[in-house]
Length: 373
Image (cartoon, rainbow, N blue to C red; front, side):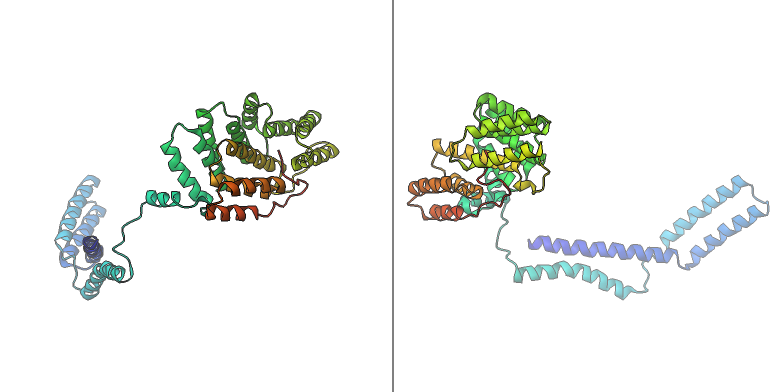
């Protein structure tokens, strides 16, 4: 490190000297050196003879070229490092050399030269060893990227990576992860649903061509998928087939339990669309509209299903409890919280994270109580 700063000081001094030398050379060439004046007078004499008709154009050009060459040679021989202002130039060169050395001295006093650099990989390793409940979505995404690299043939880490990226605001990155996931596990309906919901989020709530293809593929695998049926019904309504879309939505609502708050929300939205003769004008922010509510509920549904088969995932239980709290589904929130508390009763950090997740206030919604399928 010290060798670097000494080298930097030498390079700074050399650079300053070169700059000042070039400035002095320019001043000398433009000055009044006797040898240079003689050559300038010779150039003037050539022009005068040419003007008097004593030199034709070719002879004038040749004579000027030769005189110009001699002028340049004489300029190179002239003293280009003028003695005028030598003190100030020395001061400038000294300052250029001293500045890096002064910075080094300051660093040695106030800095931490004994500390080595902390590579990004080391920080990610520390995040990986940290309680996931203490990490924000970008750091969780960074950890999941390392897990994806370690398990290149596993679609599950890619699914979680997509969720973390989406929570970080990187919807494009979430789409990329889900595309890789469905290529590894094309028979998983939850991955196709996640991909379709990501397309919807990217299109600001519109169910475009790519989203429809994804949801149709999900229905081929799981004909009972609530999210796919909801979004395809929404697509029919958007295309002007209001009756067909509402019929699809009624089938979705009828498949839900009478006590399921999503059924109440679906019936309310059906009534709104029926009264308006189509989709009402969107007034809420994108995160509050029905399409995104459907996306959230679909992701929650997939998470709950996964935890039934792989329950030893504290981070997953925290996310599930928080999701139910955001959706305002207090019954499912409390049931998930009770199950998680029983499973992780001897781990205080997890219990604290679960309690905090359960206290998340429900999302403020307009006409969408209880969540969305």
